[in-house]
Length: 84
Image 1 (cartoon, one colour):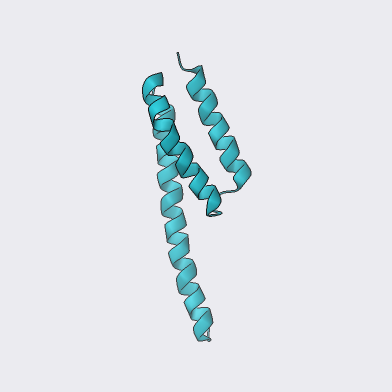
Image 2 (cartoon, helix red, strand yellow):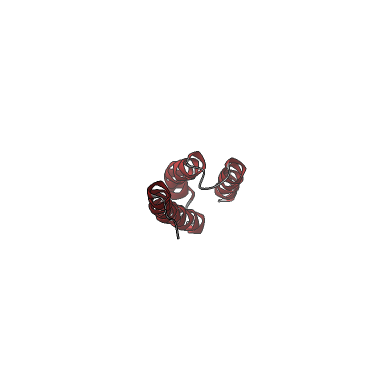
C-alpha cells in the first residue's frame, strides 16, 4: 500500500480513469455490435458517424491504439458497403 499522499491520490485517480475507460470502451463495443447487426443499409449509414466518433474518442483518450481504431472503422465501413 502507498505511504505518500501523492501516491495515494494517484491510485485514486487511476481507479477513476480505469472505471471511466472501461465504461466508454464497453459502450463503444455495444454500439459497434448493434451497428453491425443492422440489416438495413440506410439505418446503418445513419448510425455510422456516431459510432465512428465514439471510436475516435477512444483512440484520442488512449483507451485503444490508433491503429486498432483505424481497423475497426475500416471494418465497419466495409460491412456497411456490403449491405444490399
